[in-house]
Length: 272
Image 1 (tube, one colour):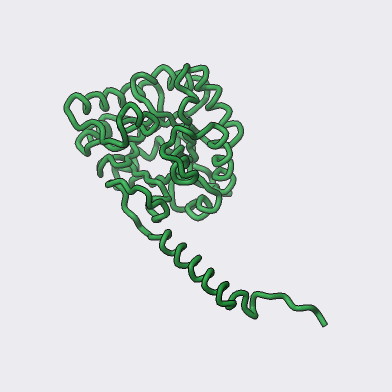
Image 2: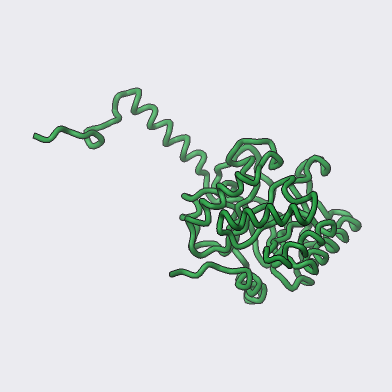
């Protein structure tokens, strides 16, 4: 039986990157898609971006812990190889380390995921340490933090000034010292993520953070062309499945209206 990548395995991939084999990660929320990418990625993040891509909400803030559990179970049960990380949604961990533990342990218990991810830097070092000491592996997330768009003023690149870059670097060190096993760096200048990656003993996973991170992560819906509402600069579309779906449904609708479907091969006949 295929062995699922563990936290220890992901940590080891830091050295693999030196041999030009970056970590491949995708954000995915559904069983069908998870099955398709099982053998192709190292990490699957069940992200709270599902609030936008799956549920049609304006941002990620309305996503609940139960939603994360439901989608997490689907992804875990449909895969055998990738390391599965699940986001702690907005308002489920910020109040205290104890609340974060209750949320994280519930998610891991009911999904079978290997770890959780939370957004935050220095201010969440205590929470990360608390979780790590109690058997909850944590992936960090610094730079642009989508759960804070109300205070940031939108999905805006972080770390562009000297002071802001220094804060990103401080955040990275703080959460590493607190116990994260890897760090997502989102929407920061390449120069800043290069410094973070060079000084980090654990893998860095970039999303809009340039070419020097130990790995890359994008939302599967984005690279497949399934979310046309907004496409960030750092996204590359490898397919236009939204167009394929529209064309397929349009053809189906036309054939139904023209009574070409169902055809002779699509109907059952009585036995004689």
